[in-house]
Image 1 (tube, protein in one colour):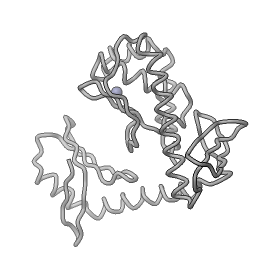
Image 2 (cartoon, rainbow, N blue to C red):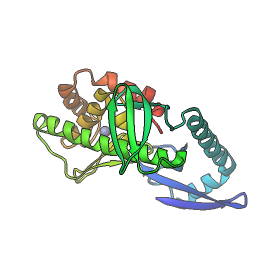
Image 3 (tube, protein in one colour):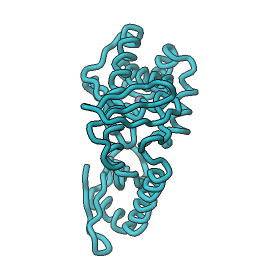
Image 4 (cartoon, protein in one colour):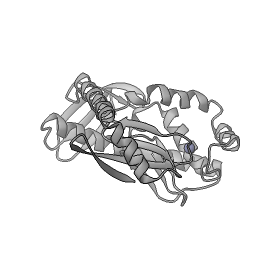
Length: 236
Ligand SMILES: [Zn+2]
């Protein structure tokens, strides 16, 4: 839930996530702002007070993550000739002028046709949309492969620009995937697809859940670790 407090002469917005946890966790995320995880029994005003008391610290945390993101963008420009990760491979981005946005992988290059290459922000947005389409196509293909093996099919399937998650499964059985999975090695994408499909049986992370995952992918722990270690490197 979105909340805001007035502190140090400014308005500070944050997202409150109420959970079963026993303590309060403060987090600053690039583009997603400040998040506060708090136990459900804690009153909203108490949480607001805690945020107000830590306002200066939270603003600093948020500035630091935004600065890191900005530095990352400067270090990884998205322009003709830039390195780009697609399906776990380091490719060279090649931009072409074309009638509509179209992409292909050939000869170590990720080739993208654009009506108007424009400035870097426009290129970044076009690359993101082309990679998202590629992610959805690949995820659908991997779902088609794993659904008969796992024995349950999800409802709606979507690819989203999720800031903090690689995949999610709702109580209704709809699944969402992070478009950046297309940048990771294919086994990582498979692992996340399997993970979400297994939630259609076990809506938790119990040993029974992990046993289901392991049945489909005995080496899943390798890719789960990969995502933890390198997930932050997958960005545009
Ligand atoms: Zn899960």
